[in-house]
Amino acid sequence: MDEHRVLRAEFVTSAASPGGIPEPGVPEIALLGRSNVGKSSLINALVGRKRLAYPSSMPGKTRLLNFYRVRVSAGRGATDLCLVDTPGYGYARASGSERERFDELACALLARTRPSRAGAVQIVDIRHPGLESDVAAREWLGALGVPVAVAATKADKLSRNRLRQALDGHASALGVMPVPFSAVTGAGRRELWSAVLEMLRRHGGLD
Image 1 (cartoon, rainbow, N blue to C red):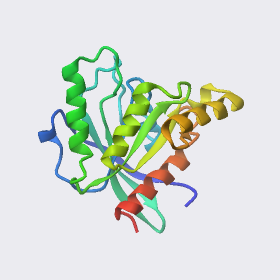
Image 2: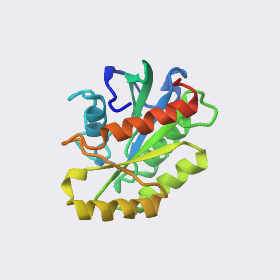
Image 3: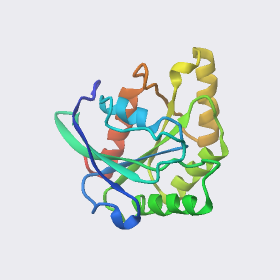
Image 4: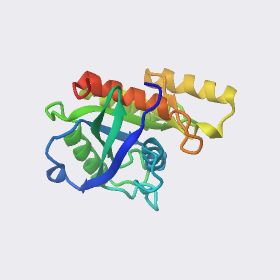
């Protein structure tokens, strides 16, 4: 399928603790990235809505899992999934208790035993390949056995030559070639949807 048309996208709920995470339902794709990497902008661009997700006014401020239910055309029909925005990792001012809360929330969401766990999109800033926190998050996701696609945001900020160099740097550090993505130009939207829907197929949530 060349184009992925979003038929519906809506905020469902937020969870501040593992006990607040909804019961498993439609397949879930977790979105993880450093604070201020542009997760909210990516969500809005991905679903074609300007104000579905709101960025925090201060990096590292978001402390919740935010669930967005999306219905997207897929093949001859349509499918439902949840995009789950997670708190940003790697924020220097985060306290030990805040980092523990992120770990607790993310581990509950991405547990092997959670039947709705379909995969994750790790979001990185294309201008900064090989950051320690990005590498650590990639290794952590691998240890959990989570299928992962990588999106490199702010691709519009680099020239073509610098873009290729940055992508190669990310691929070397993370072990996978990222999808270059721009919320400004829409570049990478089709490719990222293809990666998400492939995770759903492997999960068994898409025919």
